[in-house]
Image (cartoon, rainbow, N blue to C red):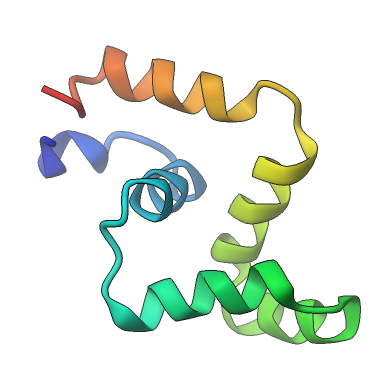
Length: 81
């Protein structure tokens, strides 16, 4: 993976790729798990501290085809080379 090319993507796209490909360290891996499992009240609290991470996971869950678009954009920017 070309990490310098990853920076050409939007922040929520970078977060999603790092999460999906297991590139986060312990803290952010645990954070994404907490976001996944949070009820709405706690999700709102997490969104105040980590808005981009919550947005990335919400988009992943709710926007049909968004993950496919992220992968295509990453490929276009040479992230996976």
